[in-house]
Length: 392
Image (cartoon, rainbow, N blue to C red; front, side, top):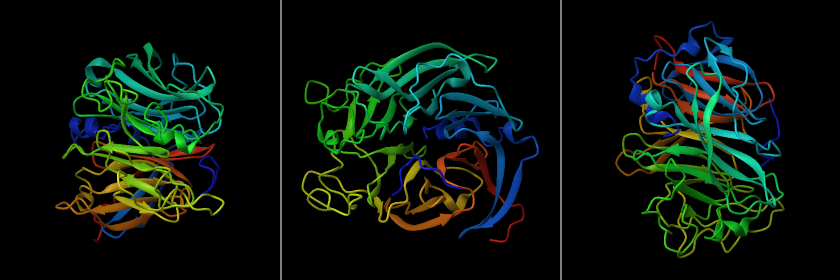
């Protein structure tokens, strides 16, 4: 797998967006789009539109209640897109260290955002020992041009000099708690240390406090940790229908994984893996061992997965309950066909391969269309919609 930042040519918001209703108009699509292609897929023909370009390595996207988009740029800017127009950078962001794979990473909206204007940001920042992942809470000013009441509510407990594996995807649970990911920071053994935030899915309250029912409250590990043994999860979403949490994480040379994290469980990295080191050497003790969870699905060779979304929308009923995974290495969007009765992956479809560049993030809009971000210095927001009068 190439370096995750090399350049080629929810709820993460899904629960909130669907809650607003499919009839909500997306103002960011009101202006003429820059380009439109019609593409066949296994189930349906789709239109792919370039909504906006000129973004510097966009990393996370959310749909605001008025239909505008809120997009992070890894270089450290947060912008809105409305009527096809990209705003100037929003002011008031926390202290961000944009180095290596780090910078301003994900954004997630509080479930009561329409009333509270509250949002959450993940980012890399400087501290004692180097760099680490942090989470901030803020409010988006009514004019959309500034953040107010900005407060850092979490920073990881061990900073190091490496610029790799910050994780950083955020999902807001149905109960309002925040789930977010941190990678192993380039040091695999940290993922097995329950006192270390690295290599984990973490869970906190919206004020940064620790929920009483977290699995390691009471001294058995860092209390913010929900699950551990993860390499570098950059995709995460709650199924808005079932409430099940899904993650997707980078493997090494192979071994990218889809997991359904559960409280206190160990997902194996680097003791077990379906991949190999970049040198070709074996990782750990094999692909399975007692006490370590198996992935729901894995890729070998790696696809270098970015963001992911559980599809629950009206536009593509054929995809209901399936997982959509952004892929950087092969520049594509993966659809994993999920059996509704067993929850097992029963098929994989690869869409848009090589046509639009590296795909960093994927989200489902209120009308059921799919939003993608392309990871480039001149990155774009794409929209996938059902082709009118398509012949299935």
